[in-house]
Image (cartoon, rainbow, N blue to C red; front, side, top):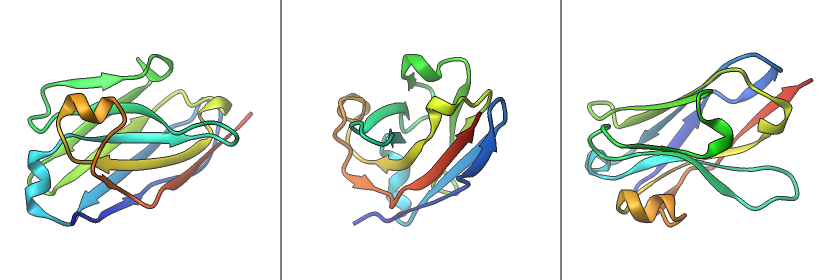
Length: 123
């Protein structure tokens, strides 16, 4: 069982930046795909970004391309999400996830989930 602990959410004005972090409890997490989902009020949870175990392959959902950057540090079993040029429509609960292959991850089927962190962007 892998536990994921997220940090870095909060309230920011439109155009601002936030950096989310997520640390996995198990050292073997470095072999998993990792990434972030988000769920806005009244909407389904969606995958927004993912990174493979090596850090060489990434995926971004169209609405965040060019604004969000995902990176990982396998020594620290941590994945980061740098969010720039935030918009009110980015307001959601952001969930860290890991597990499975990169392909299964971006199809919405990771094995482990964090508890979620709230990101609120004011206009």
